[in-house]
Image (cartoon, rainbow, N blue to C red; front, side):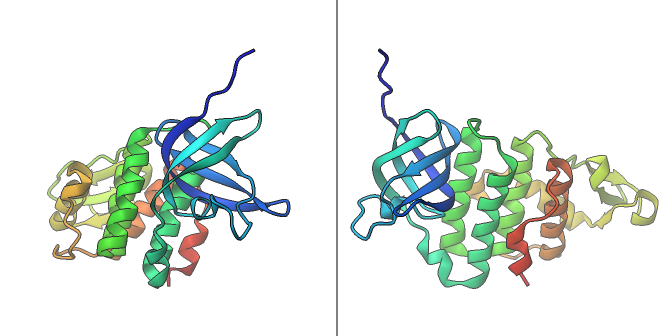
Length: 237
């Protein structure tokens, strides 16, 4: 009879839900397994050894045992709790948005190590540097590219970003039905898309409208991945 061996993998808790009296069901995006459902037995008990691993946003090395309907959390090593993100309002909302995006737009049992790496680095950078609008825009333009919808960013003398046409097109907003894009905004989007996240300029030094481009990337993601709304954004303000 085959014995299911435990699997060790790094991952980030996307969501948590209380289960029965003392347990939780976690959704974790892992490096090796993609998105999985995990039963954390006893995680609600005050002296539980896995309590710190069963919190939304936690980044950890998880020890998982495969089961019929769930993986079972056997233990692990905490890498980062990201609790500090809850101390500043917009950082808290931004981190919640990143987790919600991955939760809503990925399938159970499927994954991409690039997405795990992007999410873990983005949360770490957000925790350290802030600059929420820059981080959200950076995350989305890279994430949507990993999901197969890389926006077309080709230079024109007069440019607009037309969501339904896949990115930047030639012409003004009235002609294309898109959003006008300046040369500086074009350069900024290319910088975010093509640079490794470690080399992204997180300081707001570009001559661009950061809120405009963040909202544009959010709408582009929603259109291509068929998401009507993100609950986190209702609290952005």
